[in-house]
Amino acid sequence: GNSVTQMEGPVTLSEEAFLTINCTYTATGYPSLFWYVQYPGEGLQLLLKATKADDKGSNKGFEATYRKETTSFHLEKGSVQVSDSAVYFCALPDTGRRALTFGSGTRLQVQP
Amino acid sequence: DAGVIQSPRHEVTEMGQEVTLRCKPISGHDYLFWYRQTMMRGLELLIYFNNNVPIDDSGMPEDRFSAKMPNASFSTLKIQPSEPRDSAVYFCASSSGARKNYGYTFGSGTRLTVV
Image (cartoon, rainbow over all chains, first blue to last red):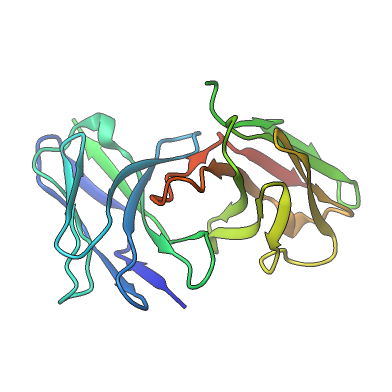
């Protein structure tokens, strides 16, 4: 079935540093791809999505480009803030059912 | 809209006791999902419903777990009897099938501790 692999965390950065969180996927066809974010003590929130190859999703300064050649959907932000500290999940639809499969999550810690 | 509402936020119970987790989805959403989150296994889909009907319960760990959705505005996840390995955060999420973007809305979760 479809699956995603995320880089291990935690990722620790200083404020205003550049962020990359890697995500690669295995899938049948070209499903939509998603990034969700989980702040401490909260549920997951949709951060951005891309629905087809070469699409770029963006939100709150975060971006990710759907690259079918490398089966990747890496999350990037040019200048992180302390408030970006959270756990980030890459996700895609399960094979044959209307549910999402999530990666293991990558914890980001931004220090002032 | 108040979002997806889960209760309780925290539950501590003794091994062997029955536990019931509750979820109110967003009005108008026709899909409801139950996920479990642990450090070891990450986010696991337990079961999901469409129009109150269970579609896939292959993620339910064992017969001790059961889920119901008696109407469009309420769902329960029950564990009977509970065991320490059931300790986790349980999330409910809902979405609209009319939108093909899988835009889930998650609740804040129930943190279950079984001692």
